[in-house]
Image (cartoon, rainbow, N blue to C red; front, side, top):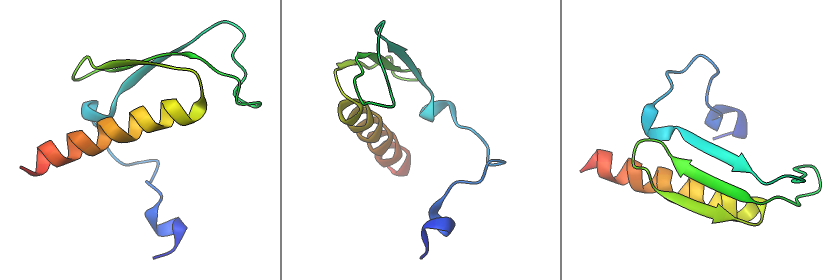
Length: 73
């Protein structure tokens, strides 16, 4: 499967189970990777603080995987 086939389409329905609020601390710079802040999963209220893009993406991935697993049960 090519990476193009795995990309979500822009016209796909957006699920509230995949909605997040991300708040960055002042001075965060996404281009350089110098970021920090807080992220909240809207549906569950689960929150985390992060000090890197990797930590932010890890939280997003973990919550989405957990939501997907719960949906399939």
